[in-house]
Amino acid sequence: MTTIGITGASGPLGRATTDFLLRAVDPRQLVLTTRSPQALADAAARGAEVRRADFADPRTLATAFAGVDRLLLISTDAIGARLDQHRAAIAAAAGAGVRHIVYTAVPEPVPANPALVVADHAGTEQALRESGLRWTVLRNNLYAHMQVPVIEQALASGRLVTNGGAGATAYVTREDCAAAAAAALTQDGHEGKVYDITGPEALTAADLVTLAREIGSRGIGGREVGARNIELVTVDDAASVAGLRAAGLPDQVAQLVTSFGAATRGGFLATVSPAVADLTGRTPTALADVVRAALK
Ligand SMILES: NC(=O)c1ccc[n+]([C@@H]2O[C@H](COP(=O)([O-])OP(=O)(O)OC[C@H]3O[C@@H](n4cnc5c(N)ncnc54)[C@H](OP(=O)(O)O)[C@@H]3O)[C@@H](O)[C@H]2O)c1
Image (cartoon, rainbow, N blue to C red):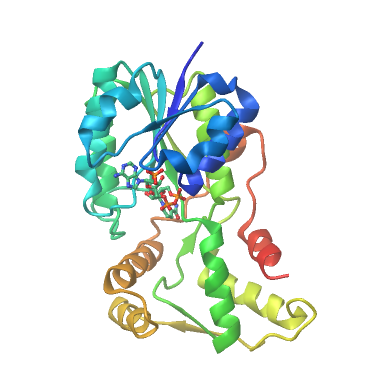
């Protein structure tokens, strides 16, 4: 019986992947590792084993990964500081006898890509290739639900501000990322493969404006909402950072969001791939459907 482990299992992606796996395999095949085991009492009650693991405390990892055959290594949220965490997890997994790691990365982790998360993911992909283990990389595009507040803001202000120029992003739902991860963990034949996990289409900021106008003209919950005539405002990276800071975002977040805009402008997030459908048999959900459902 293959044992499947998930790191970071109490996060939203870990939970969604667990839900798919609980429908596909015997719960006793699942080992869920997290910094907060108490948060996974529900999964434990369903028969999965929950263990404590913290990549920042490598002493926890050998026990956490013992007996696991295939491991979903969910990238942590410690951007800029997580490469050492991921390396520690890969080394501990190899030491504990894990045979195959599935890793959640970012599209096009190449030096020219200005997204601030690239270095961590490129370094982790390299560590996997050098680990001697089998590996699969799932390069998840940007989550679709993160555009809901962007559209809400556009409706409230009448402006949609972007530093992404005419670039497009192939937004994907977290649910589709989880379905793809569950498939990569339960099926054979994905060793040594890199998959772009994307939605069904790549959308520009102008497409988001069109969507916001549609929602504005029909209203939300039967009520009129703010502006119907939404203007697309294109700014450079410096103005993007300044605007996001002025809106109350911490500097690091403003820099991160702006770097994704720059990556969009450079075409690094535009690839649409058939991987979600190929891996899972499900049609990936469109961003417009996510936004329309959230703003009914
Ligand atoms: N594609 C996108 O648009 C997008 C957006 C946001 C994030 N991400 C990436 O995808 C990952 C999963 O995201 P999510 O959607 O589930 O939301 P999230 O809230 O950002 O998840 C954070 C994850 O990091 C784990 N983590 C943090 N510190 C850790 C440590 N020291 N050791 C082990 N695990 C640690 C958490 O696990 P526990 O709390 O269970 O330990 C949790 O799984 C993120 O960590 C980030 O790398 C992608």
